Length: 311
Length: 159
Image (cartoon, rainbow over all chains, first blue to last red; front, side, top):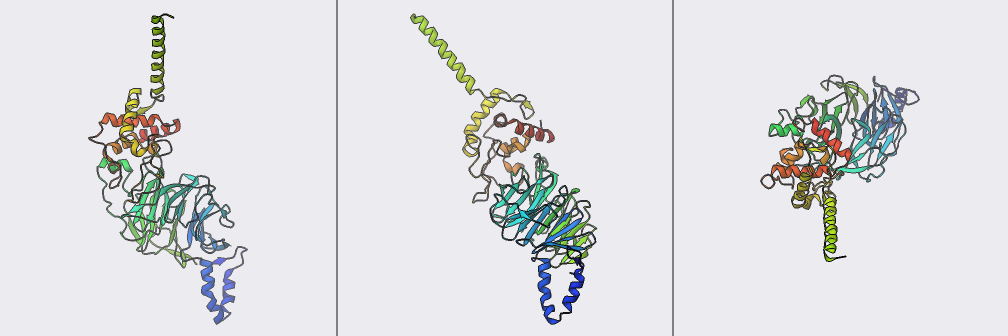
């Protein structure tokens, strides 16, 4: 972590140098410092306006040039983040072990936002693309919950997906602003069995096909996608570009995948092994990714990547 | 009162009661309600109510309330029958979808979807299916009716 500053602006580079001058003992402590900075093994990530918020055991905020500020240490490590471009500064965080917190100041301070939500691990969360106060949370071994008042109260809306003869954990959620044909839009979920989706009226999980459910009916059958995501890989992160919702990005063990048609056809853009993804709300070509050790970004839809900061 | 007078009075009371009972049981069709592209009639709703009671109520509930805990999957992986009242999601679907799901089953709209609900083709006529939909739609509050009318209008080929 060489390109970060503390919140009061004091360069951490100087701290690192002093730290390294400490000799062998200090060198032995370095991995501990790095782990605290990076947080848990899969740091969560979200764009808040043009800044990137990275959260794990600590919460960091990175500017467009990669200058980082340590904001706070949350009461519990953070496993997931989400926000909405129409509510800059407001972030929702899934906490390690269960529960949700909300920040209204870009991640500096947090308060509980899980009224009525069972204390189970939130495996994924997303803000509704068309309704900034509506938040979806997937609970482990349970299903989808929804809050329509920014986390004040929650209600159960849908069981978890059933794929390959078993209920599947939702690893990642994305509210995708494409018409479902049922008066609303879609919620996409990444699982260890690929991507599935449900209309936001929550009638049923279903495969991603071209168009809406009625298009499939008119066509007679659902055509097999010509370029699906590889089978048997977990979809660790899935995001939709706010300004171009048909543009999706998915992080799989095999690399970074992109779709330009709402998830029907996919293209492998790079071998980047990302843990979390975020799309710049103002530029669908600009995406950011975290691994266990680095914050990276790409301005060409994931084809090439530059490191913004070490974590 | 003479015997003919008593008879006449009784007839008036009996007829009045009959008229009252018929009026109380007569389906109420909200103004302007259409289904599958045509105005919904009182007779259609009455037929639909009877067909619903015989063919749908055992799963979807006598009062359209759905199966208990209908948002939670059954052990076989299938979802319980949802309610058809305003607490469910039926009113998010266009007329054409609802008709097709009822006639051909859910898998006709969502390929490969496994459901406990059978298609009613060969069991119910198209008119009977249409009548059931008209009955269900007649029970919704105005907000749900307006929303569903818009969904139907946006659905190519809908009413």
